Length: 213
Image (cartoon, rainbow, N blue to C red; front, side):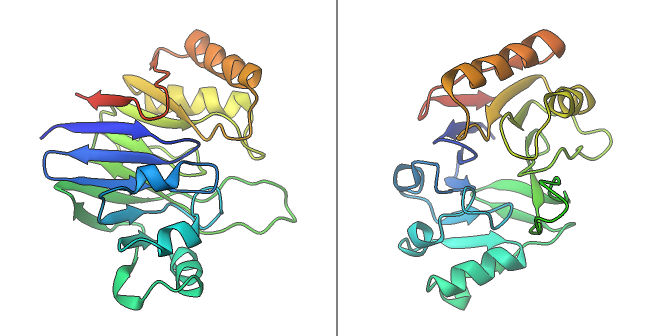
């Protein structure tokens, strides 16, 4: 089965399969309206607004899967119980024909005094990793084709970003979580990834698909 990834800003990615599509992390820095067009399922790594625009998601007739705090935010936005589905580490579900494994991925520290939500990572068909806000490693033996790598965040150090890519050893990197970066800052992050890791760094424009091998 083929997979295609399409970014719609920041951490929002639409995954298209032969059977349909689903969206990961439609947040407030993203083109949520376009991303959600025609999908039935949304997966959310954690409840921060840049990963979940609860009002925009609530306005769509979609099923949403995420940790408990995500479901609480959606309940407050008016999403009914039957459209809210809990994700916990170790879960394995089929969405639009793709197999999604839910990985334990604690949110990286922003500051010791800033409380952190539960974060999970999503491994799609064993070859695409969306880590949310964590430098998580995939299960041993996984061969990652595309790593959706955060490149800008209040919790991110460049050294940690580079070491994460080196540890995961993906064939390709698609930079995400860049909504707070200037053009110059994003270019610097991509240059460092290209120079300090062996992965091919892709730079698709918003709405431009990337085919997964």
